[in-house]
Image (cartoon, rainbow, N blue to C red; front, side, top):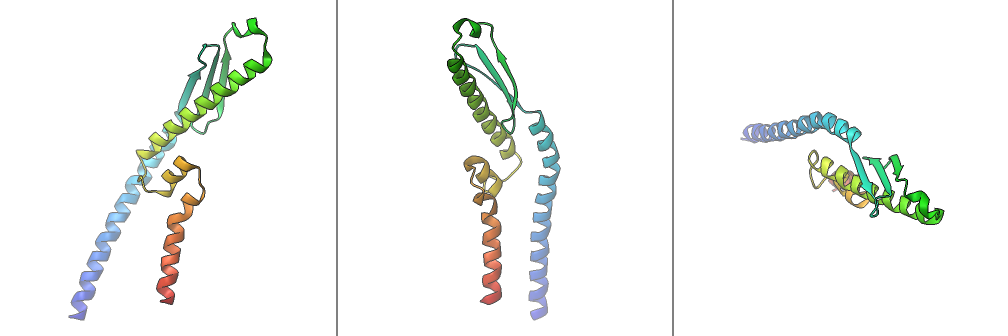
Amino acid sequence: MVESVDRDANRALRARFDDVYGQYRQLRSGLDDLQVRLAELRVTRRSDDGQVTATVGARGEVLGIELDQTVYRDRDAAALSRKITATVRQATADAAAATQDLVAGYLPASSGTMDFLRSGDFGALLRRADAAVERGERGQHG
């Protein structure tokens, strides 16, 4: 009877491993595509008056800023600086949202990576690993 229980437990464990490994392989194959899509992501945002256009990449890096000729009429450098900064910030926020949307299609919603992308909290990346280590330590000592 003990041998039968061991075989059943082994079969269940093997089935769980196969399931997890299949999920991993699917995730891994999708990550190559995700990497390409993130590298190609561009978000362009225009100021309300159309004088400033900012383009940023997936990580919020500024790829280009275009100024309409009408910016030179005002000659207010401080106002132009504020307008450029605001436009870049909006483009960066839009890029962060687009990046989250892209990544969400490849990772489980409950993953630490998704939590990090939403919150910027580095602890989110490690919470699941910390919990697993803690469970392992309790299992060894308890």
